[in-house]
Image (cartoon, rainbow, N blue to C red; front, side, top):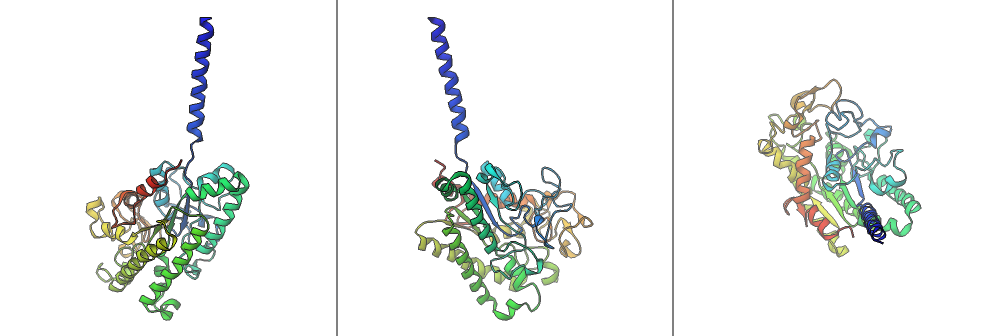
Length: 368
């Protein structure tokens, strides 16, 4: 009799343990969708016929595999670090042949280096995934997801997912200011161009909402003017800021945040969260030593003045300690700089994140 009681007790304990194990593994994981340009691309351009790629050394030198992955970084980029900080599995590039089955539940990265808000941004780079193409692929992804888990569960996954959009800088660096007299600079004055780009961006964000995005982080214009090494040889004689480029960034920032406010008001909820990227970059550009950098004017891996003439190549000059440089190549921040940016995305004040930071977003929309 006693042995029977002991057996039943053991069986109950074992059953409870299995139930607890199954429950832990059944807990929902938030999917993560990434869109945008080279600050977010984790390998899509590597799978395209384009001149803008990062699939060769020394890109990836500090990545866990120490090999190039298509990321325009010495290691992890901004989406990677957000995934790491939130305990999420890294998303695969949408074009990856490995994005099948259960991997669809993790999310996907649709970003493509060189793209902008406008479809003519980046045409010089040949085959890239313009933002409207990224949206089409997101629709395609959702069809695949519905086939895998059903329409209702697919809708829940997308609505609960975190969405990150990093785009806008190329519309200025690789479009308006790409040549001394670009088509867009002949068509628009700078203030009118900023207004036009912002209006197009608002239309794009509406499409993200229509496709189910409900927790959408939107990064504004990245570094401009005195901020990035590639611009210093072209626009500065002494390393000082170029007045016009700084003006472009300032005009854009103000209208960008106002546009996010308007969009949320129209929707009736704080769906879109503005990341004032220019402010984030300017902090360590203006005072690199405060963040542990020796310089923000010179890239770690490059050629020429400020190491800012080209992107990185196997023949480029390479610094020994990437953590001492705010910029990895002439355009892209180092992994350490990306980590600083992500900390502000997670915990920053309204100076950097409007109307709230990512930690607040996730607290308000828990996975239940």
